[in-house]
Every structure is written in structure tokens, then in C-alpha cells.
Image 1: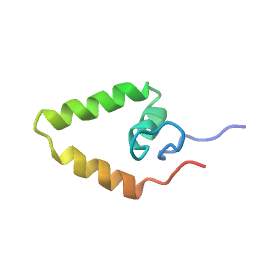
Image 2 (image 1 turned 180 degrees about the vertical axis):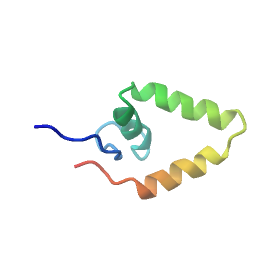
Image 3 (image 1 turned 45 degrees about the vertical axis):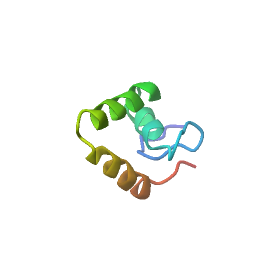
Image 4 (image 1 turned 45 degrees about the horizontal axis):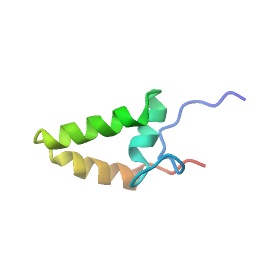
Length: 64
């Protein structure tokens, strides 16, 4: 079965909303790397990353 890659929130590898887990699966990297990157960007003064996360949580569909 050949499925194309689809960006979706994960329902099984999530801490809050599954956005970082879904993004990591889409990019083919470890979810911890994506989560750490998100935290670092947020702490470096890009506090708008929290807003980006919330918007992604609302717009990204959950995986099936």
C-alpha cells in the first residue's frame, strides 16, 4: 500500500495536541527533536511560536 505523505496531528505520539509529533512524522525525524526545537525557539524570544502551535492545532487534521 503506497500512501502519500500527509501532514496531520498524531493521536498516539502526543503531549499536548499532537502537532509536534505529526510534524516529526511528516519530516521523518524524532519527535523529541521537533519538540526541543519548538521550546528553544519559544525561549529565544519568538514567543509567537505558541500562537503558531495553537493555529496548527486548529488547522491540522488528526490522523486516522
